[in-house]
Length: 424
Image (cartoon, rainbow, N blue to C red; front, side, top):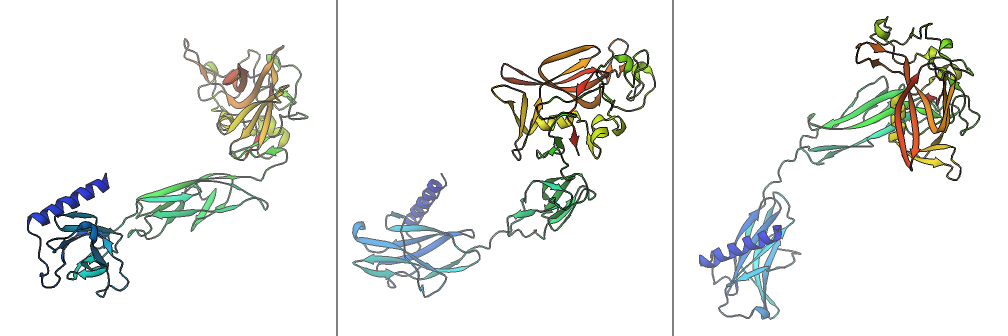
């Protein structure tokens, strides 16, 4: 459409030249054959040049007309630019790709029987290039994982590209870390300090434009852990398991000792009336005392008690990250032992085995996955409006008709459920 508009505009301008009897920039005596007419400068990058054939009779098939254009008055090395439109003896050419703020010389020519005839040499000057201002900052990469320790990847170099490159307000890139206690940045070099997440921002254009990189710093990969490229490392097997396909031990929520049976009467944090004595949130169980605890403390975390360091029972957010960043498949396909999670980030995988859980004296078995989270359920009774803290959340995964079904379920805290540890 732009090209059609340019041609139409050029045709109209040719009509105007023809209708006005042509602008006689040079006299007929200077060249009997051709006249150089005025031009139309197209900003800083192009020009419309015009000329007129002065011959009263000529055959368009036997004549060539056009222009010579150069930054030199001698036209040394200039190549002819043939006409693009001809109307009643007036012709024109559109020439693009010129240099900004530059003086050019041009002259029309007619070539007949192999001989060039030139019109008068005229000049024009292109306009200065417009000033460019920063309109975008592109940071690469936009995510980075760093690992502490001698063998870990402790730093990464970020590259900031400021567009356009010739922006007048590009006085340099300003770097900032949202949390220097996790990661610092200097001139684009990000260095790990401690586990956590920090957002590195690169800003340019007097602070108007920026881009970000999310940096995750993790501890060295501990023995028995699998790096899936997530915020936490996942254990290669369930707590107490002998292999990936083994379900491992079951634990009551908030207890660190193994048990074979799981009646309410033996639960550590229930009294004789099955009233919770710990992890009673900010409201207290049914109006009782509140301790503002909803997540397991390390002292009550079976994974931490067994493995130490920063191992713990996963939160629901950990399970959600696992689901968001992995593909799931029944494994092995011929005799399924569980669900295989394969990381979309690095291709590593873990197997969550099918298992069962025990509540009281009943064992609930099926080809499903039940795993504790580290969160107690805070439930408000609709009638009494009082809060209850008798249950804890668990991650459940089932395959129904080939469709993976995930649920944030809950059971009594004294129930025996398997644990898949994670490590920060």
